[in-house]
Length: 227
Image (cartoon, rainbow, N blue to C red; front, side, top):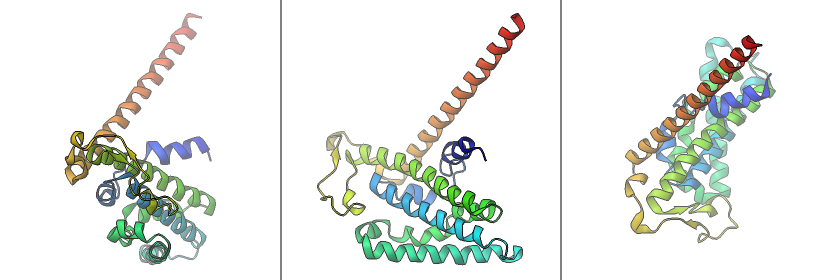
């Protein structure tokens, strides 16, 4: 397994939020600030990693015709357990994420990776697939959430105490004065616009890199012919 390609495919080339556009409902709904985005991203990554590992461990005894219902039972059990842990130990984050924690059960990223990777691959590959697919989605959510929070509220990392309980609620960055904020950014249309801009920027970077690669190959070919 080529580690560089493995990471590139999951974090960038086939990013679940910016390329495959899977699970956009929580991505757009919970990214009004950076902390909510990180919280949901961490939760999704944890669910992906655990479910992928469990399904890969039992893939040889899971009947092919019954695999989808079994996936759903495993995913719902894991999500319920994580929801209870959040309720017990990070209640403020649990309140912020609200209904979107149990809705992870229906997230098509989870079921898709379970069937595409975990059911067909080794435990180690499935484990790391869950981690890096989740991190790719979390990075996208964090980018959207940070931009929306800065433009809409002028702050960054407001409510960091939801994740790190030792931090006081007054600890956050103020980057814009309230009179310069754009309230549209924290509304649903703003989420769609910012996500669209991020996708466009990613596509531009990919196209630029592809053109440079082709140009370098052509230059190498020409220099070899001259020799």
